Structures are given as C-alpha cells and as structure tokens.
Image (cartoon, rainbow, N blue to C red; front, side):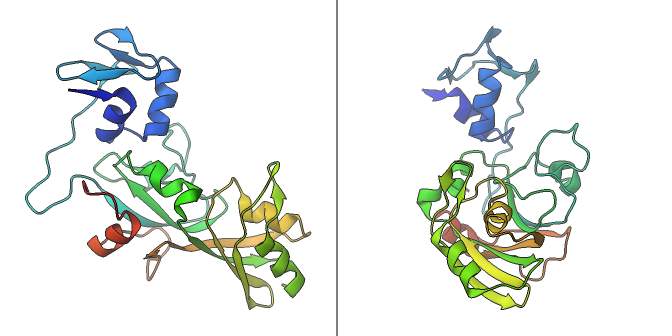
Length: 240
C-alpha cells in the first residue's frame, strides 16, 4: 500500500501538507536516497529524509486518547505565526509544546487572539478553505468613529489583493470599535478593508473560530480543544 509523500510527511506531524509540498518542490526531501518529485508516493519500508534528517514516527495513540494535538492559543501581539526557528518570537518556540505543532492559518504579528495549533497536517487546508464556511470573529478598534456607512461597506465586500472580499457581518460595539465575522482569511484582510474607507486599525483581536471561543484565555495562555469543539470544527474527521 502506498501513500502520497506530502500526506506521509504531514501524518508524522512534521508540517502541513502545504508546507510538505513546498519542501518537496525545493528538493529538500529524499526517498531512499533520491530527491523526490511532486506527486511522489511512498510505501512501507521506504526511507524518507527531510533536509537529510529522518522523520520521527508519531507515537501510537493511547487507549481512549488522541493521536494528534489540537490546542487553542491566545496569541499575544509581537508573536509571529511561522514555524521558521530562525525567526525571533516564532509561535512554535513561544508555545514550547513537547510535540511538533504548527499554526492553522495565521494572525498578523500586530494582531492578537485565538489561533489553533495542531500536529495533524491533514486538517489544515480543510479548516482554511473559504468554501467550507468556517467563521472567524474579530473585535476591532479603529482611529475614527464607526459609522453605518463604513459598516455597510465592510459587509458588502471590499476590493483588496485584486479581488473582492466575500460578504460578511459587521456591527458597531463602541464609538471606535466594531465586530466583524469573516469566512475567509486573506493576508491582513481586515486592516486593508478598513484602509479602503480611510480607517486605521489600532487593535485587532480574534475571539472565535467556528464553535471554538477564546473564552477566559489570557494572552499567552493555551488549552487543549475539547471533544465537542473538535466534533463541531471537524465533523468529517474521524482520526483525531
């Protein structure tokens, strides 16, 4: 029985499938001593190395336990959502988990709030794909009073990155603050959307991803997801 190489790498918890594809494309992965190409497959007994180092097999799941790690982190401002160890303040070193985990999506360095991290590289794209309608809720502070016109414009969609953002929900929560619920995650999306109406974001905090809420987590704190949260987030995922 064979498995696609990117899936094999992701299942060890080394990185996501997307990152595995990048490593394979950069000729950083070998199978049985030969550089692997895009679409490569591996079978039992094949030796896979990434940058010359063997992949460590994930420990078998304990009875009643989980095979993978799933945590919710309240990311502080100043932490960068990257797995690159050379980047000071990277999110992996900040959490310091005993298992190899990586972020699902990202929050800007200047933003704070809820971000999910996992050792399961197979679920990352499932959560990030906009067509899966995963909601992300943010509380945003801006430099000018929030008007009805501004909220309507944000909700309709805004032209950024040469595309128009999907319709969303936006509501006022304070004179200089609003709540927004998105179903996509373009780079610096909320900041660029606000800038299109001549608003500058002064604080941005994500408080919910689908059924997972930030709750009482203080900046820098994290917790494991509950079974109920996992079932709501990944209803089709059976291998936790």
